[in-house]
Image 1: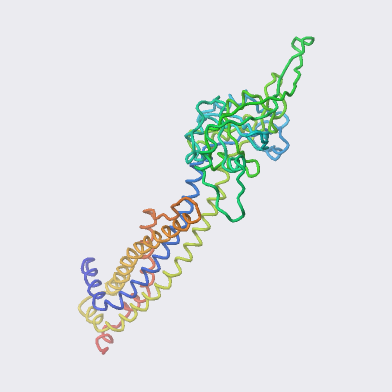
Image 2: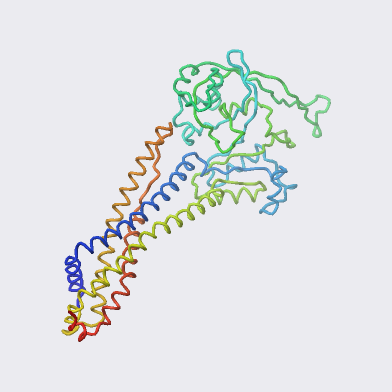
Length: 456
């Protein structure tokens, strides 16, 4: 029999018992819908996490540390010189790292605790230097009230929301909502605060001028007036936990002030301060591993969020696997319905099968007919199930966004149905249906035409 003839017979047979076949197809649809809904949720959550990390600028950033730091002795087996022989992480090293192919910029991590004065009241807090490029490369400043720094050396400051509340003397009771940041901005933008800090100065005694002259270091108390130009909800480096800053200065200004900071280590021979860490921004996240390797060969430690996301990707792979298994259970139950429907069809159509064999139909033709019926139910059920799963996903996403808005959180896309999931779900439905049709098709093909013609 030709394929067209088999397909035509299969469609006709399905129409004859349309109610029972429709119920079986609906069972397949429900199974596919549950599979698509669960996997789309897992895919959506993974994409949401990836978008947030990528938009934060962490995916294209490599953190460089000194192997001389005791905390990095675990890196002794990495490629490059031993920790005792490794170079200092100073300004010279920063410039060399910036010249690595694929690197956009490299800058030191300047972060210190200091005293701020606002309305003659002291406030002890963490201050961090922020590069001017963060204006367009970090989502922490996307919803900021006010404006970014006017220049990379301007005497300006951006405050974190919690510090703004502290400066204004706002104390929130437990369980109450946070203050509207726009209201805080109206009270603080354009005003000034005074930063008291300790400046590290270098001087060479006149009596020891020469090649062997040694530098003398002193600490001088200074003050810097800063204009508040912006308020933000987030710390651009929000992964620091307790070391999160609440005041942000232009990085060049922070460098020029020569502030004594806790992450400033010893001094090299040419009196250049060495840092605990540098941040290196790469042109493309795909080039991060190559840049990491180049930095390690120079004798420094290197870490990127790409390393950390390996465990995140493993977690989502396991999550997607479990969701697929649970979603497939409903499809497995639906396959039992296919077996039951086709077995009942054999009992009802034994005489028809006997006539087909008597006029020359082979066992393969009969088997192919039942396979076509099972495949048709799988195709229709799979397509309907994908549509139903898409609708379920949209409803879940809609309801979740309503809940997030009521909790004062921004809306999020936690659901995604890519094309490969649509095609894969339909193909999986057809395969499961064909497997379910193996036994009924083989049983129909083995019928004796003589016995089948006698069946009433």
